[in-house]
Amino acid sequence: MNTPVRHASTRWIAAFGAAALGAGLLAGCTPATTDGGEASDELYIAVQDDPVCLDPQQVTLTTALNISRQLVDSLVDQDPETGEIVPWLADAFVASDTLKEFTFTLRDGVTFSDGSALTPATVKANFDALSALGSTAPLASQYLAGYQATEVVDESTVKVTFAEPNAQFLQGASTITLGMLSDETAALTAEERCLAPVGSGAFVLDEYTANDAVVLSAREGYGWGSSLRASSGDAAIKSITFAITPEPGVRTGGLQTGEFDMIFDLPAIDEQRFSTGDYEIYARANPGIPTSLVPNTERPIVSDPVVRQAMILATDRTEIAELTGSSMVQPVAGVLSSATPSFLDQADALAFDLDAAEQLLDDAGWKVGAEGTREKDGAPLTVSVTAFYGQDVLEATQVQLAKAGIDLKINMVTAGDFFGAVASKDFDFLSAGLTRTDPDALRVMLSPASEAHWAVIDDAELEAQLTAQAATADPVERTAILAEAQQRIVEQAYLVPLLEVAQVHASQKGVSGVAFDSSSRVNLYDVTVQR
Image 1 (spheres, rainbow, N blue to C red):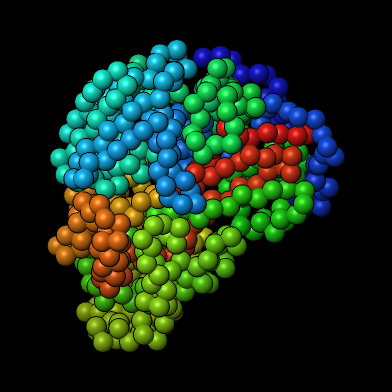
Image 2 (tube, helix red, strand yellow):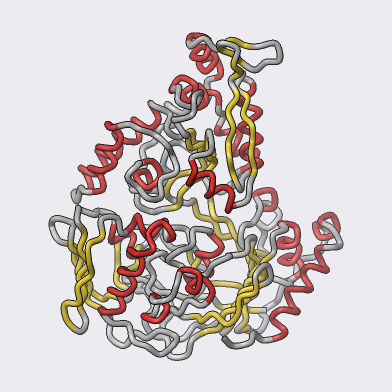
């Protein structure tokens, strides 16, 4: 790999010194602005998390996906406004009537940053390797559910075949997760791919230093951007430095002093401060499943649908949004985000009703104990939730549930321990969501047949609905099936929705061209910077 430009690191290191002055001083600073400044070909972004792995086909962390998007292109793209699937690396594509076969005609002249060409054999190598990775690539394994084979038809055509109808595959093919990697990268081990992915994107990985920074440089000779992009040819930005900056105050302080051009994950508390003419704010709701309590119904108390239903009624989602959420989105109103196709507005069924929650528990024999927690047969109504982010959301929920006599214990763990709990089913509830433009996210999260399912439930009626929607080509019919599934999920309280999440970022006013894709991930190809 190339060594990053030295001043790229010293510039953002200065932000740490500035932040040490304290949030109070920074709040009173004059923001760093430019009056018709000069164009810059460098972009400095502060990000919240270490990406850990940069293989787009394996990662699920938002920071890793945002960085990886700059490295890889996808066979197709999806218009975030209309949902239409449009050409990218494939300039033509067609699905069979059965939704079992998908044929792509590849664009001419596409190369990877190692100089190798994109060919039908490359697509086959990618999908075959992903199929072999299985649960190591949890999102990809669901997009490729039922994968049988990829056939090289001719020098520019490839056909992907599934054992069962796969209505969501074309949308999956537009995601970062199914972005194309070089043949050599596809042949690496899962661990090796994390550190050195080679894509066909407008940028190349120069250096990744854990807990420090990721540095990218622009490719020369790039000429196959998505049809949704405004630019063509090489990116205007020649280098991007992602400074790994966990502390929110350091990120916002660095933006205010001009050390950073842009920050990801602007805290909700700072949205008003940066909503001025000196800055730009970029916000889009995450499609898919909002942050929710996800149950393990094999646990004694959690197995009782009355308890789960009471938890839905005792949760005040408007208050949670006001206390912890972005002002850019509305309170959650369903088991899918409002930005998701086939979203069913269930605000009435999810309405806060403490009296109704208490009545349900009274009727089920859960009586209020001396300290306010309900009891039944000598056992307290205590359940736990395991999470690795969103503690403030859970603390607000904890206070609300306590008013109904439900004792919610919060178990904050590392991401590794969280996924260990998922694998071992060692949890009462998980706090989790799933970003996905396609409503098949419900099947991924809830179906026991899904390799990536987190919920532990056994419901033949719901399983039939989730399976049927995945195999239905007609959008009207599919939406009707999904409506039934969403109603079933709320009736049985298989999810307790808490908060509709948005991706909210901010930049200096001299930054332009930042774009969200349909999954609310960031594409930086069109970006220009004036300082």
